[in-house]
Amino acid sequence: MIRAQTLLKVIDNSGAKLVKCIKVKNKSGKSYANIGDIVLVAVQSLRPRYGRRVRLKMNKSEVHHGVIVQTRRLHRTKGGVGLSFGSNSVALITPAEKPLGTRISAALPRRLRGLKWAKLAAMAKRIV
Image 1 (tube, one colour):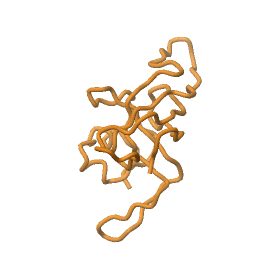
Image 2 (cartoon, one colour):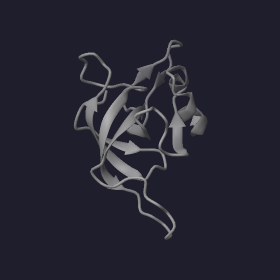
Image 3 (cartoon, one colour):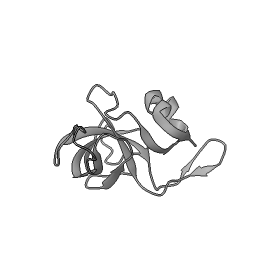
């Protein structure tokens, strides 16, 4: 469960490394987010640039939208299998809900595909 002020890892190649959750969006009064929910995040640290031609898509302290893709909290599937990850992670998106990055460097839960995030699932290395 992700609340405001939670630090999250960024698992795509958008340029950010660590972000802080500012607000949970579209939850009608709930103050926490689970896998597949949209949050508003502020960039805390950036990935190092390698080479001169690499253009940064963002700067520090910018505000972006993100989708929660991994949480440390145990999530049970309908089959009874529990699934939890090693860190709380987010993939950054535009306000029109298109991904900012072009690759995702971690395994994503199968549940994301059914929650209108099939594009993120297609970019992932592995689906768990």
